[in-house]
Length: 155
Image (cartoon, rainbow, N blue to C red; front, side, top):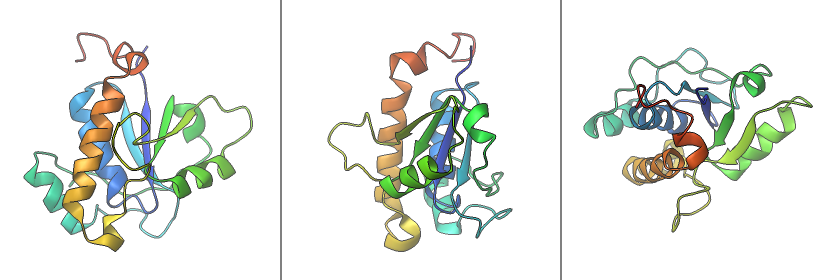
């Protein structure tokens, strides 16, 4: 069974699109998507400086468009990864009762990192954000329950 992973940040224009792109490279065929807890940027492309930073590392975000997390996401995805503790709290608040999705922080398995991936829309530090996203994505891709859910043909 293929694992489906949803990356979530505030507006779905910086961190979560980058997380989606990195995980898609590490876990091809796993079913990766991204969304935001807020509705400010629905339908918009990822933020220009984030696209530039990601592209310099080989990740193309240009085809992504922002969307807001909805109730069906908690059934459609096996794992919902929040970029920071506020995103996680927001997800817990809107999660329908009885949903099957596991909720966790994006950096939960990345040793030596902070708990939160800082939002570069506010910090303007896109490189540090990308460093943390790459580290967190690699840590999740190495988790046995994630790696084993992607068939060898899909890897």
